[in-house]
Image 1: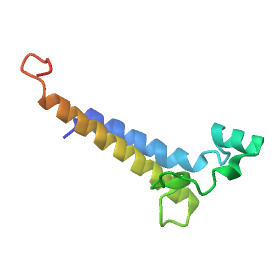
Image 2: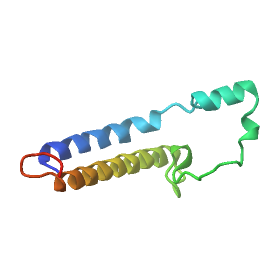
Image 3: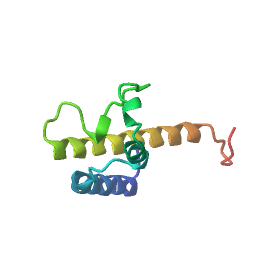
Length: 102
């Protein structure tokens, strides 16, 4: 279990995500914008190699766009947090008493 300081930081990050994610720009990102400007974006439509679980940063199943964006942000932060904690525990188990990797 992460320490108290880590949990406070996690809650602060989640608060920022909830408050600021609905204010995110609706403009396309750089690569998408170039494809639109140069006229070849239609070539990529329907050619996705992998379908993102939260396409367009919207949590699936929610109709309110602001809430869907905030929930997608929360899910992303929690997923990254769990991966980092898991990796930290895995690396920590492989260290000897002197702190070096086994």
